[in-house]
Length: 464
Image 1 (tube, rainbow, N blue to C red):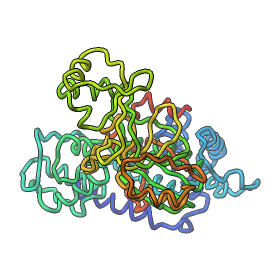
Image 2: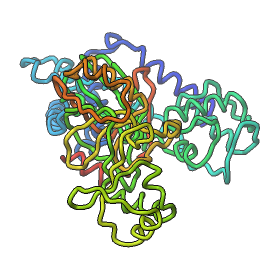
Image 3: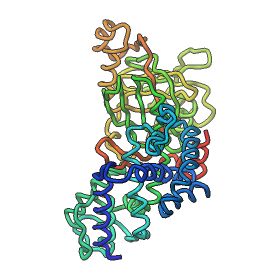
Image 4: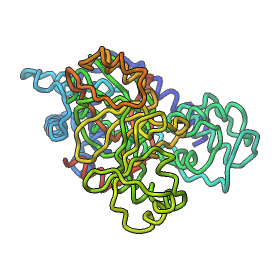
């Protein structure tokens, strides 16, 4: 099929998808469509012969066959949503013969269900009409370059909604392609440099079917998680490197964050922030001492004093050594613990937000602000560094800190540590979502930094 015709069909498909009112078709047809689109998502998450047969009948069977199968399909969908802890309206519908009411009552109540369902339909249509063979460029491409793959690249940008116009004869990486590529990179959490390197090319080569699977699986994880949250919470999406603070359904704060490296991952958990620490000291965990700090001490014996560390023995007494002695000790068994004093050079910065957990992770400030400009911010040893930490601290002070006068008095102090109790704890959730539809209706994807999207891991998560 000619590509221009494919683009035209795709545009028409989206137009019908978003503007055709339900009343324009038969009520029973609308009901069957609702069941079809629900099955579409189910088959992406948990394909089975039964669900695939039902999907095939709803797509291409006779009207009579569809209606005969409808009751069984509804029972299967009801069971699926229930086992996945996805909220529906099925229990609010009394016994009725109205197929449309029964079918639509099974749809998830999540506000993003319809946008996700519509996007899945389009991606699956795209998968059926275009072969998404890998593009190979043999290097890097930037604006002004000529390359045979530019036609395929611009076509994909067009079909994914990032490029307005597609010219099949163009072989130059022009301004329009560069602009659309930055939009594409932004939607995938990549560095917006309008350069096609390995990461950008990998996402360009990700097939529509694989995108649909990611979106469907993450929809389930997001929907059941968000449905369980209270009115006030702090949520960090790890692979998105983003924090959001919500209070009574209103977003109070967003911030970029830095999370754990792949070999020192930030755990997925929920907890309660119970204290804010002003001017924290930093007690170096043994693992970080061995892996990170002792190699630096071996190179520079003055590292300990220069970075304002106190050294304690097992009895809690401060140990004093010369730089040469510290260097020598760092080469062998090091029987001491290091605590960095509070101050402007402290690794934790100005604020620490403590919540009890089994991993000794928490939120904190950082002295190295430049790292927030990195697109891949999996850079810490497990704790979460917050860019807009001052705004978060001020919100906590206004809404939760019990001793507000001491908080005000301590703002000029940088050397003294002060723990602040809260009138009420703040729920915190560390989650892992790599695909979603944002508030503007754009599909967002993020790199699977901890390799959680493998088939085995998805199966494990979905069966919890």
